Length: 82
Image 1 (cartoon, rainbow, N blue to C red):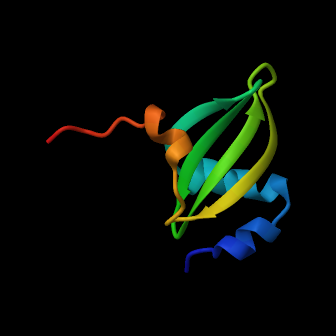
Image 2: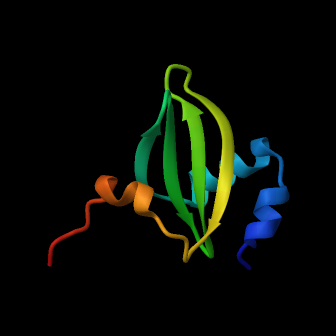
Image 3: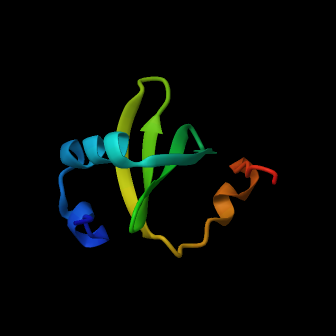
């Protein structure tokens, strides 16, 4: 059974990260000031991982519904050509 977005967001960061690293699919990354924000698919939702690249230290995560607008990532996605 898949973990719900709410259940994921209630977990402490140290329990969220192994789920993202082991079960998530990396989609894109973007810069937000000095931070890097990596986007992962962890169905049935998405997860943004905010980190300081000089560490690299994970600062926080943010879960999003799978239907979230991803305009901030539009320039960073590369889709396969058919």
